[in-house]
Length: 290
Picture 1 (spheres, one colour):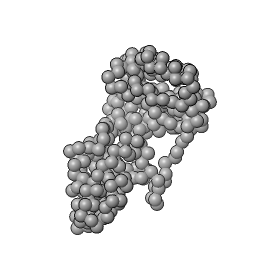
Picture 2 (tube, rainbow, N blue to C red):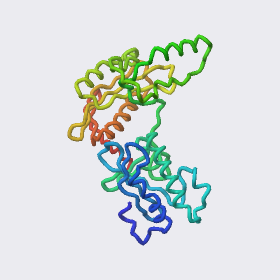
Picture 3 (cartoon, rainbow, N blue to C red):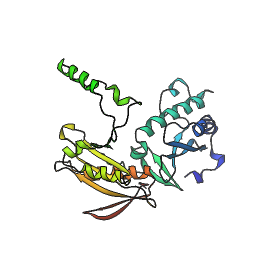
Picture 4 (cartoon, rainbow, N blue to C red):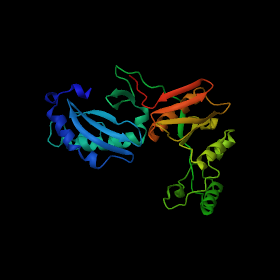
């Protein structure tokens, strides 16, 4: 796409916005993001970046005349001299929020040379939307600090006094808290009938790449399953264990596999290998839509 856009087609506004956003290269918008290049292309600004250990770079193209985040740009009109700076600040905060909340996983994708172009998840005309599930796929907490006895006591006192809603437990965000021993990691999954001990054994052997769990939107249904990934070898990550509970909602296995592909990409793998009742499958982590 960018290869077909000549310099003569680049607008002055796009060029000025790209110049204003050059600090993204020296000061990335969030952890795990390394911006390689910010350049004007036609009426857009292309931001080329790497995300964690993904084996391929990404590119996002944003219109130079539109504020995607919508905080600073409403105060400035496109024709005003301060627009490029407002656009650049707007873009920085948009990238920070979107990347931190899983944009690379939920965006539609298409090939762009050796890069993967990320597009808004909702379709316009060319690509279909990705399927949505009623499941939350998240990493299994590991080595969580033990809850100090005094915190448990205060919590018990609050419950006895009639507190109904949740309260903030400060120890969870205490950066000075000592990590736990990890011996009971995944205990909630064990209670649901899943083999959390296998994941802990793999971790002890240095073979655990990622460990994900599935919870339905209706938390009263309980944990639905988990998936355990191995480490990256020659660009490949294997699924070592994929389990669901008997009452897991339909689509739980597919949702866990979709999450596994995302994690495999972030680990640096190009391929996720699955061997189960459906046979042997090799899934590309680039997840191109078209």
